[in-house]
Image (cartoon, rainbow, N blue to C red; front, side, top):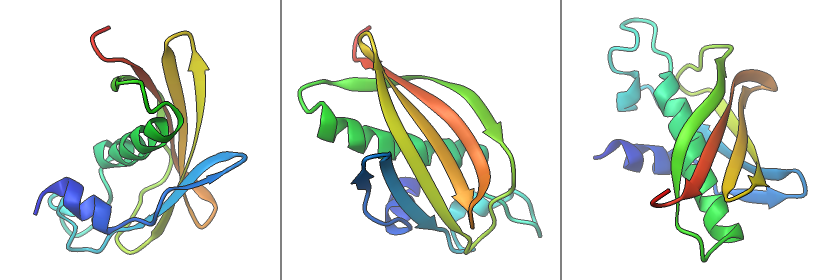
Length: 128
């Protein structure tokens, strides 16, 4: 099973509100992202944390801008503030702002209201 399949099976539907979008995740200890990171003390790798924002942001962007073909250009202002362990309920919140041709997704991850990570994802039209 591919990593993205594990992620999609670990999450809720993406919900829209006036504040933006939210989605929750729970990763079992068997999730392959925990392998080797770290033996005896599994934590969710930062690259997986940013992938959660990327896949959810792309879904939100397709809803809001269906005619645009966008791709991730950069990740900025990335901060990892606490470890995320197996079976912790993780809440992703994101809001989208448009700046010129780009769309900026401002993401935060939290466990029990405690911020685990924050970052911004910059999406631009494909080919730019």
